[in-house]
Length: 294
Ligand code: NDP
Image (cartoon, rainbow, N blue to C red; front, side, top):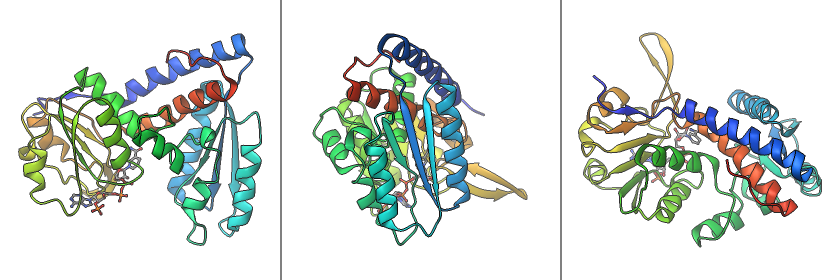
């Protein structure tokens, strides 16, 4: 039985995209500003192709300019850097996203750090991670922003809460921990070497799981009433069917948690909505106009 409140990320993301569309209409009419997002895809990774298609579709739906660069898997690092440079210099483009992972012969850090930090809407450039860590205005990675938005929607103020983040990747774990610090949580970051993970998780009012291990977090690990934000996306086979599950055992955790995100339909839909949100922020900063309410 599910006692927990289900945090509906799909619905929240729809609402956010609606507010972004309204904001963009205002930017066009009041400031002659049409935010533009460019996505660069290298190779034919099927999951990346789906992400890029969804990003382009949602970009157009909110009224932004969408540009796609699809490059062959054998594209050289120099040629990819040249595409990024061209987008850095394009005044109609305010956000640049290079879809990861890149082929092995390309240095991911070099490419990410070649993006103009003011157009780095994924928030992975070392300047943006530094700005985030020092509490300066920055473009912040999309999945962490979306995760914290959902936690705030469920709990209201996060100030003073014990938060445990499971996972310390540069893409999710570390930036989400930084955002929670900014929200005045007491933050613990757990990882594969953490001793007594269930005991650590049991302290948390808020658990953010970004591990990549199907259904690892169990209900009896949780403090009763805890809010659980499950970032994990794991493909498994069950009862002869392919399924997508999170890092938390949903049915089990929902018995103890106060609120929980489902997978799919929780954090996942927030990522693209936050990418569009970041692109509006970047466009306003570049053009020097105030960021509208979204
Ligand atoms: P990474 O593989 O980069 O990082 C996983 C982290 O989990 C590492 O820090 C690792 O620790 C830790 N970890 C691994 N095993 C354990 C364990 N048994 N106990 C405790 N910690 C462990 O993954 P990402 O951060 O990129 O992604 C995490 C999950 O989130 C994935 O399922 C991914 O698909 C999903 N994801 C979802 C997104 C969305 O849009 N919803 C976007 C991005 C990711 P250590 O550092 O010690 O190795």
